[in-house]
Amino acid sequence: MREPSLEEHQDVLEEGDHTIEVSAARAALASRDFRTVWLGGFASNIGTWMQNVVLGAYAYELTESPTFVSLITLAQLGPMLALSIVGGLLADTFDRRRLLLLTQSMQLVAAVLLTALVAADHDDANKAAIIALVLFGGVFNALNAPAWVALLPSLVRREHLSGAISLNSTQMNASRVIGPAVAGVLFSALGAAVVFGINAVTYLFAILGIWLVRTPQNPPRSSGPQGLRRLTEGFAVARRDPLLSRILVTIVAFSFLCLPFIGQMPTLAAENLGMRPRSLAYGLLYASFGLGAVTGAVSIGTFLSGQDKHRIVRFGLAAFAVCLATFGLVRDPAPAYPLAAMVGFTYFATVTSLNTVLQEHLDDAVRGRVMSLWLMGFGGTVPFGLMAAGPVAEATSITVVLLYGAATAAFLAWWCDLSRAAARQAAPDPRLATP
Image 1 (cartoon, helix red, strand yellow):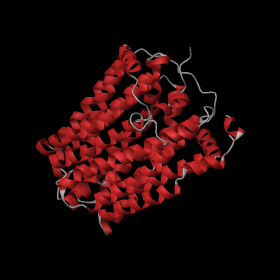
Image 2 (cartoon, rainbow, N blue to C red):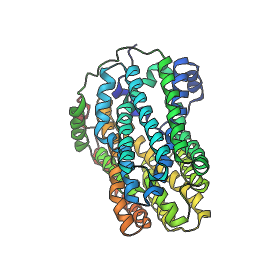
Image 3 (cartoon, rainbow, N blue to C red):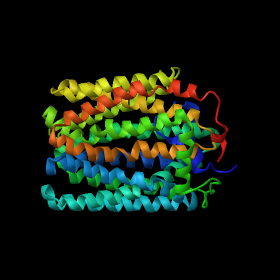
Image 4 (cartoon, rainbow, N blue to C red):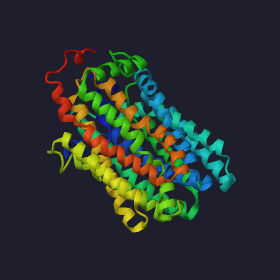
């Protein structure tokens, strides 16, 4: 039996899209290779989220500038927009195990250098050097992600793939809660350099896990188009399909205009709630948001699994708009914690439902190309939304950023009528099945 290609399983490893199947999950964990990589990835993701939450807080403390916080996030996530397709092509061309060892090692180097810079200069670190090191790590993260997504399914038998996907989703979401909670304590007590150093150490777990596994040396080449040609054909497919077009426009608008608050969380905590970014209170605020996100993602595969996803998307967008606006207007830390959790819940429940509708609608022949557009729209546009939000926050306030995000979500709740879009396509377009 051949190994699944990157296009076949890239989409199904998106976090929060599948309910955990206990028997399949247990079977996947019984695989030595999967278990080894999974545990290494879990440890590394915890370290990554520790650095993510502290990096924004440290950037704000260093400059008190929302624009600089946005620049840091752009350096961290921006490469995903330009290099995700390159990473996918590399993953289907070269040995994935060796590619991952290289990309993980380079991220380790970036983390070590960032730790050394911050430890040496304390509160007067070179801002340009910080951005350069974060960008260096972001480039190799963008090249790493497709290979990591492609590797996991090859470590379990085909019938246990759903368990591997569920477990991967679980560790990715759980690390969003554990990492910020731990980082909030350590940042407050020991400073940013210690947190960055711990993140560097966690890369060793991922590298060791990859080093110990046995994988095919030459992954299969996809028979479809590669690189930029694949992206172009994805646009053509989406343009012909009303439902796909509406989903993709929705996720781009949502990511660009509604999600900048995540990167600007240190600004919001400091200006609206009187929290020092270097405090346990801030770490718990971010962890509350992460806990809500985990619950929202899991809900779509559990107690909301039988509900109409088209309706969940519209209701979720409306609920997110209300929660985000309230979160932006509150000035008391006490209600901010449950509000952060509610924002996280509605955010991830909405995005997971939207992603589920997209995947259920796609023909397998075009799934990889259209999912590339989803990945770029969901991940690649966020840092540019942050870049736009930074000057707005400085000229007005962070509350304005959250309010225009809430207004956008309210508009999308009205506009994103997926049932009507699906009805416009009464019969499947035969062109969608053309590779």
